[in-house]
Image 1 (tube, rainbow, N blue to C red):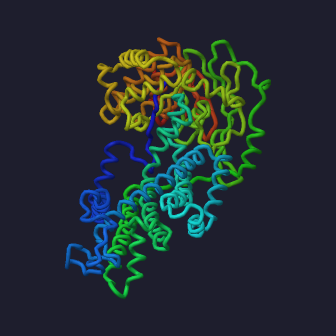
Image 2: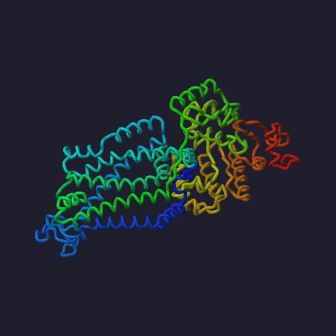
Image 3: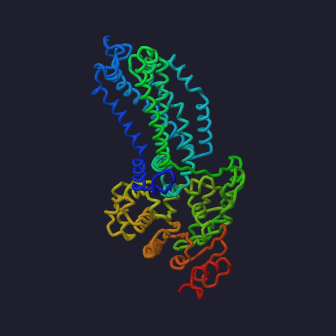
Amino acid sequence: MSAELAIATPSVAPESRGRRSSAWVRLLRNPLGVACLVFLLAVVAFGVFAPLFAPFDQNLTRLELTNVDPFTSEYVLGGDAAGRDILSRLMWSTRSTLVACLIVLVVSSMIGVIAGLFAGFYGRAVESVGNWISDLIMALPGTILLISLYVVIGPSILTAMAVFGVLIAPSYYRLVRGVVRTVRSELFVDAARVSGLSDLRIIFRHVLGAVRAPIIIQSAFVLGAGIGIQAALEFLGLGNTREASWGGMLQQSFANLYVAPINVLWPALLISATILAFVLLGNVLRDVLQATAQQAVLTPRRRRELVATARPTAADAGPTAGPDTLLEVRDLRVAYPTSRTDVAEVVRGVDLTVRRGEIRGLVGESGSGKSQTAFSILGILPKEAVVTSGSIIVDSIDLLADPSAIRSMRGRRIAYVPQEPMSNLDPTLTVGQQLLQGLRAVLPMSKRAATDRLLDLLEQVGIADPAAVFKLYPHEISGGMAQRVLITGAIASDPDLIIADEPTTALDVTVQADVLQLLRRLRDDRGLGMILVTHNLGVVADLCDTVSVMQAGRIVESGDVRALFAAPQDPYTRQLLSSTLDPRGAPS
């Protein structure tokens, strides 16, 4: 079956290496972004190299240099009230600040991002529990809690920062949950599901990659907040007085304000400039990368009401139409929410049968329900969709009544060839990596055996140098070759039924002809059943045996291709034919 066919083009994620590069180029062309990056890198170097370049130890005391003015002695930025070098203490305190900020970032992102991924991907109960916990944490008085914690743990600023990370984890959770709710309906998630990959692999391999841009943006703000809260705690005297810190130095300078007022400037300037740099960098990153989307969602009660009356019992399903029947769809109805309680049907009572060795065309204008019907069969409808009626029967099993059945057949018995081939290949993985992961996810075999099988199939679908293509990234191959790669992934597990959704739409005319010929040859050689979703009647005339015409979610006419084209009965079919084919007759 198809490999991990990602990443489609979610609005929050780069769709290729080129797009990632262009995002960096736009960032580096922004003067404010460059200034923030340079300053923050300088701050990091200032702290990391403190053991090598700090003029003195942070606690070295020289009483003769107490409160000495800047630039008048060995102490470049002057001395504090205890005779210690301010520059050296700033360098050492930067080192501890970086560690504390990393702790905040790691704790908050690990908790918030993982929880947000699962809540956004699964929704419903998982999201409800996550929201409740998030709201509970946000209701806690964070600063008071951290001050109270000092009594229990003592002057451990690192532990306090870990607790602060937990307190701000809901900011990641809410952000990631919202973005994932949009990403989960993208084509690359559907393609990964069809390939037979588990939810965990989809979440952490593809969905996480798709939401990384807003996570990076949020991290800039979190680091700024971490610096502020650490400085505040140290200023209140809740840190370790034996170690230099920005907040501690600021507090000591304020205590000595009337004697050496200039000493307040250095820690205050460093704290303010660093926080400002993180905030401004976050704003620049947002302008470069971020986008959002929203969808209507039914209330859980209304969804349960619709689902409870939707599917027939196993006894109602009955056997399929005949021994050669691969698939039978009965009275399929699919709806989407228009509000929290109302839905609108986009598929309205579709009946469809596919037999072994038959290519059935499913045609109609855009929005007629063709792809929604195909996605229903594959079990990859968006989570917002509701199947309000119908049966999808394979081997006398109603896939709608038994969701585990479709999960076991998808990628094995039923395969998928999507449109937009370049959008359904993960730009971060080579062709071989994607095909191998998909095949080994549905068929247990060694990497060597899977590689040999895939190389043979790539050659069968017309790729001249399979070994070379195997090592290439998607951006290094053409659209026609990418579609052949997807077809290879689809047939790798030797399925009985292939659903091809507009497989030639994004291809040149000459490449379309090659792909159609390939699909026909695969049908003849393997005896596959096939559903070809398309709006192109010329493709149907050239490839299909039977055809079903859809309009406004309904099948208005079905039959043998030649008979239907020669004598269409429905006015909509006649309209489609008159606008597409030679009006003097059907194709010869």
